[in-house]
Image (cartoon, rainbow, N blue to C red; front, side):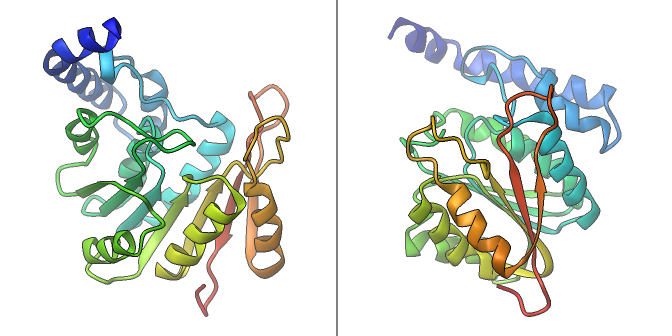
Length: 241
């Protein structure tokens, strides 16, 4: 398409412009609380035009506050998409945190960010943070092995599961990566509200099962806050997952 040819031609220039806009916003919004607004306020160009999370603002802000309280050293995200939530985790995490984000190129649920965005997302990391971007299938055993390697086989503090939204897919992500989360850590799921109009969206089915087994919290936006999508939070107990 002509648009993509144009974006590719100007990608380097748009990348530099996007980083400048991001740094300008960071200079103006200094506190951790204020920086929640940055991925919503950011506007770039071309392939770097937006990073706004595909989330209900009330729901994701509630989760952001919970992650801030953890001061997490190790964070895993399954499902990168526009990168908005990844940016939020860099701000919520400890200054020297390690973050890993896994996204399947060509995935059915918001994946396939272009490869040129890899260095852009890498710039989200704060000065002492370490970022690993994995463009691969979260369900592969090799992916799990690589994730463990990036965390040096340490337990992680927070996992955000927002990749495959089928029942089997989200269950597999939980069963593979849930045991990596330490006791007292958090595991969050996006799209826990039943939306029959969206084909293949079955996270709510698995969420019902999790609520029967674990200590859970739901963040569902009030009327007037936008589309209610729902975020579910599992508080990992002393025995882990």
